[in-house]
Length: 432
View 1: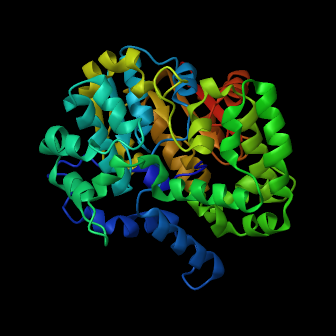
View 2: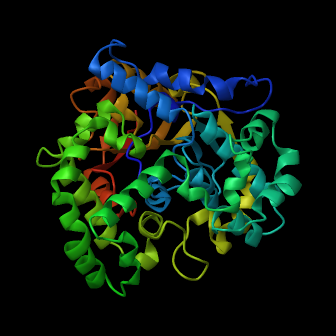
């Protein structure tokens, strides 16, 4: 359940056209992530922690996003004609936005594994024969012919760098793409973290998957209170989660750990307990595919419960018709916006990238956002702690050009099914 994505990893992207990306990008991704993460001397305790995080983050982290696109689209009031700039992440958000037929979606990112995933998703939408094939590839577990579908329908249309990523063999001799023959969502740093969480719970005699037998919110609440909540009071768990490195699997870097812990009673175990409580208890399981991934380790089958928007059959035609409106770019977000004309972006999606930023970076970003934003433009983002990170850090002259929608932000935060963020924030550009 990632609460973070490094600043540059969220800010940068990759078009993967051969004129844009050299073939060794896959092997330089750790170095590029490091540039965004390092803030302390290499041999200091904080510096070593940063470098360990950058190393872990250089590969696949998020098989899927952990921001709720339905809440995003409502907050943005996303519709036809809108020009969107978003951080790419796992790409579920990008494809979800296409259901509203925006004019353009520009996605930026750095992590080469996530870029390869985004590029493959776009080609899968274009070239897999049917919606059922798309669901089997990205929504079903244990479909052992998905790698064959990749070879036949997707690979011929992928750029060489993306193909290299998915077809590279592990030390076991398996091509990376064969993970889709098993369960893609149990891989990556996040997948391994969730698996570890299940192992720890079972060590204490609790099977988190047991909550899936619940028939009502009352059943879900009962399971959480009786089974899951006590695990967070175990001394071993409280000790382990007090180490910053323990949450690297959630995509939480050292800087964001410090912010996150302020939202609880001073212990990370209490923060994680509160976030898991919301995920387990606030939304019916039939409506929350994030809970399915956390507890059942898979997506529901069609008709069994809600699915990500891009895997719902009703959205297939719109997404396929609009897929060519997506551009994926390898660029720092600030630099990417600097290359755009004034007043040419209507919607900005920053995920939780700003939790990483220094004051100088925040002001540089919001200078470009303000310049490129159209009148009425909307910016949405999430934070690990509850408050917005902007007041007191971004200059008043910039913030005075925006209206913070406090009530809408609180409402969206409460309805975010991913349930793991402290705050959701919406800013609207004022007329000059």
